[in-house]
Image (cartoon, rainbow, N blue to C red; front, side):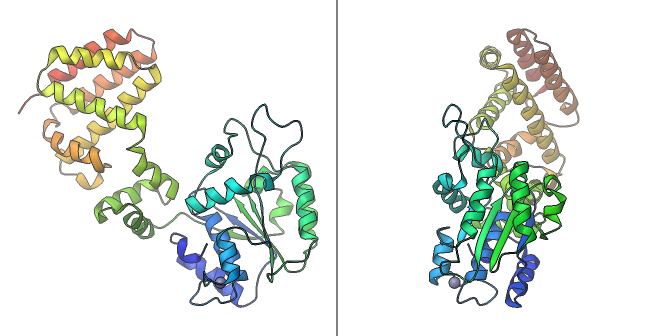
Length: 381
Ligand SMILES: [Zn+2]
């Protein structure tokens, strides 16, 4: 991974490049930041830069033998430790080591550019119902690996993702390693919760704080990745609060099964309502009544969100409406039907239905009454 593959963080990249160029490479560095802001990606770009044989223009070259192996995460001097576990019911009491999972790790890092969270990693290795850990055996393995000389690079690099997942014994072993720096060995730890690390470990590292991604950088990313219009990109960048995972969720969320279904149900309800199709409204109510209670509540919450946004579009406050894509297209057309005369009553109906659902009311009665009431509130212009 090159620095240019990492979204934003211009100042931080410059700082990392300068310290490497000046030979100020601290033997243990702790990249901290929430998942989705690029801490792992930066650590990987930095590792590649350190061992590149032809760095220039503030980045690794991307083509020298070292860069090529680093990009594949297959450099013999690049080691990884991350939280793992055995899938339920498999493996005995013995905890597996990171090396067993190196193939899915490489794949996830490459496919996501290093932007993924703990849960996505557990899903990638099929242990989503369990916690991953970094075991004592893993810490022994670190010592074993570091006892070899570096194979071909100047620095041997040990990347530890989520060191806060270390068991106490593992943390104590790591602490001993950090107390006596090994020559030409670099520890790059990437933590989401540094407060959960031993303070003695933290004090032996140099912290690299990775903040959230700035708005203009996020906009640029969205335009590049999804081919968005600048105004759309700007809305989603604001919504994502500088987190790539959040931005991707917003963009792709619109296409995931339940969201798309909730949106379709909302569109049907409103179309049938302004056309006064009572029989079909009752059929609609039957469909919604057949959903699970949690789904019904989410449908109602989502409908409130769409109504409020339609109201803002109608009131000429489109720039603060958080909509895009199909939702934006529909709500723009629908906005004229939502105004001061009905927005509050509509939201109240949705909240009432949600409360009745929560109290285990009869869903058929709740939604039949709800659909007919909404229909009265949506008046043809
Ligand atoms: Zn290179």
